[in-house]
Image (cartoon, rainbow, N blue to C red):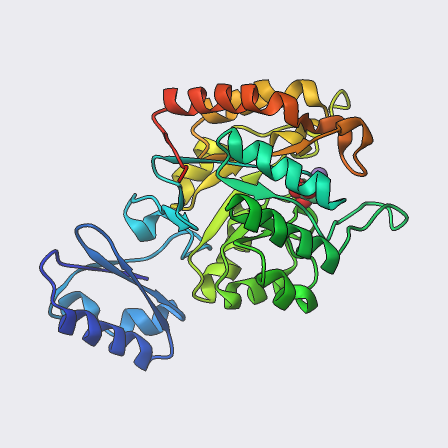
Length: 341
Ligand code: PEP
Ligand code: MN
């Protein structure tokens, strides 16, 4: 249930409602908007309904939250967008963020050189995997701890906040030492233990949509993180499986405006993994920006032909500035401000 307070409700009135909600074993989730405070009561709907909060001082009205994802639903925020501020970079609302870097951290030179190039071209975050979810157990699995150390170096060199994937909760502590945003890969989108752990860590989470997952399943994944009190969640469309075989996945751009109706959370797009091909990355990025994406996460490498992982889809660092310029212009056309420091 959602308890909408009157515009002039006092703190005491809000506290009193929270106590009533908690008295029946439900959790009260406070959301302070520009104008009104909304209290999400998460628990047994019957119990909350029986409290008769309609007539309570300061309460305007009580409505059920219709979606199964309560905290992620746009209803909870009355249409207000969540704008995250991560290391001084804003994302969501009217702020657009470009997240760029290699698929995987390979060497110090490759990592730092890529970070410098993307920073100079105006990227707002640096991405790079130390733990890689590979389809084959015989493929390179990432440098692990050493990769995290190289990411820390790139961050110190460039000042860019780091986005990196966590696959196993046992690595959470070491990933937290360098990550400003923890990525949950498409293959782990429904790893509920992992999501809950990241939720408890409080570290911002970037959740990629599973390639066979519905938008509702993606939003339920976000709910696992939000439920732990972590409100910093980004959703990412990265291509889904369809019958088409001419490209790696099908980028579901319709997900962008639809997710933005369903949720207040920022929505970004990954053109690299969807396409699997470098030549499609620019058109897909421009289309994503035009569709209202709050950001793009894209793969870049100094020598894509020599990349250990995902080389065919990586942009060359030499081409990145021109690419970033086009993407930024498209985002501006869509009414966004660029998130830079
Ligand atoms: C990645 O970002 O490097 C990656 C493996 O992405 P996804 O989980 O979307 O396949
Ligand atoms: Mn990759």
